[in-house]
Amino acid sequence: MTSTEDLVVLLHPDGSPAGTAPRATVHDERTPLHLAFSCHLLDADGRLLLTRRALAKRTWPGVWTNSYCGHPRPGEAMEDAVRRYGRHELGVDVTGVELLLPDFRYRAVDAGGVVENEHCPVFVARVDGPLTPHPDEVAETAWTAPATAWAVAHQAPWALSPWFVDQVAALGPDFAYPHPQ
Figure 1 (cartoon, rainbow, N blue to C red):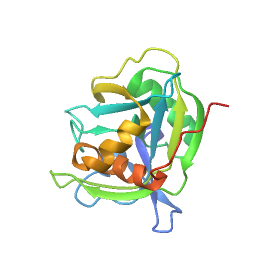
Figure 2 (cartoon, one colour; figure 1 turned 30 degrees about the horizontal axis):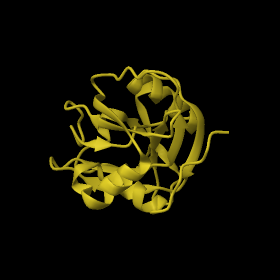
Figure 3 (cartoon, helix red, strand yellow; figure 1 turned 90 degrees about the vertical axis):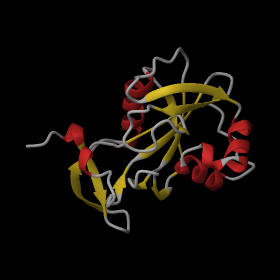
């Protein structure tokens, strides 16, 4: 019996649940559509955290991207998954989790042929305190002005993950992150 801790939620094309599968089996050349999330993490000064994916990652190793991504467990609230992954990948507690793009979906193929195929709502959250990145997840971190990240996404999209470039496009050129509640 597989623990729900290592399962992802598979989806039908319309976004409705279609079952579960072990996480290790859903990222290959035939990746089925599944549920995930992305999070944009802001500090007290409104800077956006970009992370460079660890070199051991199965997909897009060493690529700069949004703060972190993950997969909710079956039955887990998305906001709880966002908080859980903040602790796991960056060693921080996040607050003020807000949904930015509820219907974001993408499909991309990395240089090794591995496909990402995700319905991936995008969130923003806040952090106050030092990061302690997990080395199996994050190789480097950089805090930057959101406008700088947007400029890189437009001028050098090849330098970033395809999902972050698509998120920037979906949010639009005049996007401003919401102020903390």
